[in-house]
Length: 361
Image (cartoon, rainbow, N blue to C red; front, top):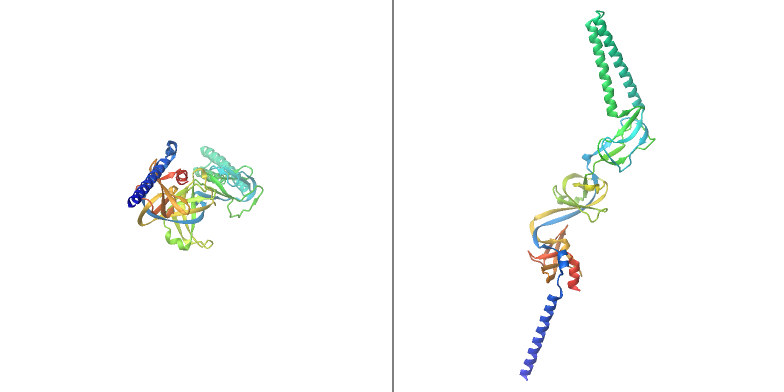
């Protein structure tokens, strides 16, 4: 009887072992990464990196104040033409507007008088020289006539320089020209507008925006966590999938009475002029925390499913393992992991969702 029971148990154990062996073989042979999929799949090593912290702030894009010029009307008068609109790109020296002005008419009268005085002084010098040669005047008369000519010429040059500075043209027209190349970021002038002589407001702002500033509002509770030199990543509503990188280069150590926040500035290169002044921006500042290190993987390797985080550990094309991980912190494109992976293992960072679905269906 006992021998029969033992024989039956042995048979069951053998059968169960065969089933497990068959099942393991099925798992190993059931999934194999194809050549095409393998070529498109990207992997990264699990590495130890210095632990970094991240703070998120909100702010806006502004022009670089060092590359922005306000254009003021030098004279008052009637605006005859405006040749540009808000947002236009202008070259240095380009005509922006023309103003017909009584002040300019006064300069024109001065120029006419100066030229007449110079002509009279030149004729007087000629007469004095001829009379001196005929012994009809003294050398002093010639010197006085030459001095009068030089004075008249100096006055003509002064008025001519005024013409050049004021861009004065015939018809009592003052030309407003761009002092630098850039974009019109502010415009407060229209055709037929009458500008007062005592106007103190600018009529144009011109800014170069090949470089811009991202200005972040830092709450009082976060002031101690922000420092010059911190790495910054900036995103905007217009380009949610595009990240602009820079560093904090200035901290304004005052509290803005309107926002109740301190401002921190990040300089950004702006190729293609993608970033526009006054765009709202999200500014993320990161820094190392005390030299501590932790295992890290690219954030794209982490798959969130069923309220858990997973990564795909790649051993070879026939052996890809789904591994649950305990995520400590995500900082930009890096995710720090407490447990679940080992230093030096490889995780899949591209096509991982397709492979995860195939392995876990």
